[in-house]
Length: 502
Image (cartoon, rainbow, N blue to C red; front, side):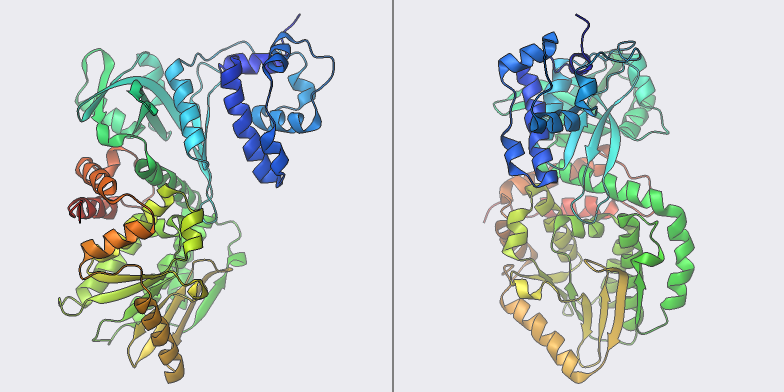
């Protein structure tokens, strides 16, 4: 009997083992249930006997409707085609994925719901890693290639089994990540390490190892910390690159509106912008609006920041203009006795619904501010979630600037009415009084924040120290001129220098 398209696709992906196939099918079932808001789909599985019949082509009628929906989501073809003969184009090439690539792809997709690994069906095509955002990241995909690895102390040795395949993968025009898999790992499964393809090109060109052996730091192990950086940076970077030309054109609009005390720009004005591009434009405008309106202010203002999740706060770690903004404020109020203050509203519901990798991004964004001598307060009171971002210069003005969770690219205002200024001060004072970041020093406040965000403090210190020492550029590199890794490296070293115990 001629094999079906389903059987050929399963073989090409190395899913023709019932256990392996079920891993992917059940993951697709959960994903489909979520997208269709149909919880019953998540409970559907494939019995061993049914799978054997599918592989043998012994199907007299198509599966039940719900099973068909999941299969079509998983494999990308209608079931009428999946259970029919494959087109002649299939089978001309076949990608061979070793056990390490399969186990790593399953482990990654299982651990992080915002990513999926797709193994290529063709020998000359790269595998791919797809990332999804939650609300303000657009999603993106990067090429990946799997290699076997052996970890020893603080170094990972990667052996390229096919030098020609690696050479093609490292083409400079394409973004890519090399995934190294140590099958021995530990009781939790294989150890997985990641390195940017541009780093591999540089290392191999400068220090070609014997027999194609590449070394990378063990700090590049894929866990919630490194996944957070890869997940956020790739989406921010690609979102900005896709909007680069439009953002350059919009600089004139920004320059024209900045002198105005009040302005707002609808997202409909630039519907072709990516979500990341829109957020960058709003953030850049708000930063300049605040700096202009603080001219003449001699005492350090207090700030209210609207970000509540790691996805929203990631801009502080990567956007170049954010770091310029923080440095400018620090230079304007340099006296040690004039420490600035900034408040966040992060309700417990936001903490519980966020995965740990996202909470790590949020923690590091706040640590970045503490590093710049900004005393941070975090209130859990949800009634303050709708408060706009502002900078309050006591007795003079409140500079309102918001681009987070709005239907506009930005909303900016300058308020001088005394009653309004008293209201802003009352909000900030209440946030300070209810802050979960209590302590006399940055270390004590950040330790309290880690506890609130349910992040293990000693583990976080170790990971930040290791990654700050090795540098993030070896893990993943930006391509957009609007992104930098300098501040992230600095804050990792800052957190890594804090005492790991109480």
